[in-house]
Length: 189
View (cartoon, rainbow, N blue to C red):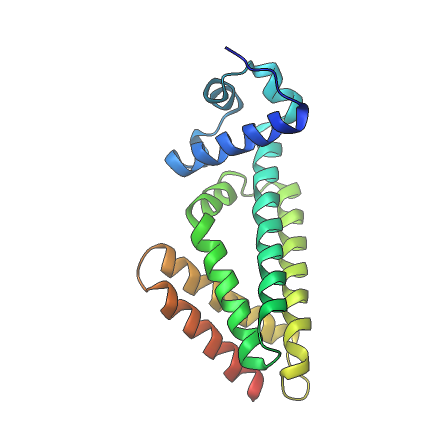
């Protein structure tokens, strides 16, 4: 039986159910029909919010990206105004965000790989995230650092270490410590 909700409440409910489907079985199981069934609504209700499966997947990716940015901004504001403090904030917020949605995000990205719209969204998100990290670290780095190349290298290593923590190859705290050390050493040269 379909429960009457305000439009925004329904959208939030659908996104919550979509995340649970992805978490339980991967993005391949996320279809608009399955979402309607699990949310106890009709397919037209789902299509009213998400015109296609790729559109839904892009909304999920954007939601993850927005959460990651908010967590990073909060961590940077709360951290000591030193290279070590800012590096630790970047490392911990990155690892914690990936741990919170790591498997789901990998599944979502794989499901829409090759979609030009998602690629543009992903590249724009990555650039904005890199800009935020670069601006946070610049006051504490040595001359001409952090370069864009340094930021790309740092974030690549951070992603690899965070994914290793998701797979439980290394503990969360070890991933954070290694990312922090990598940032400090990279920007102290």
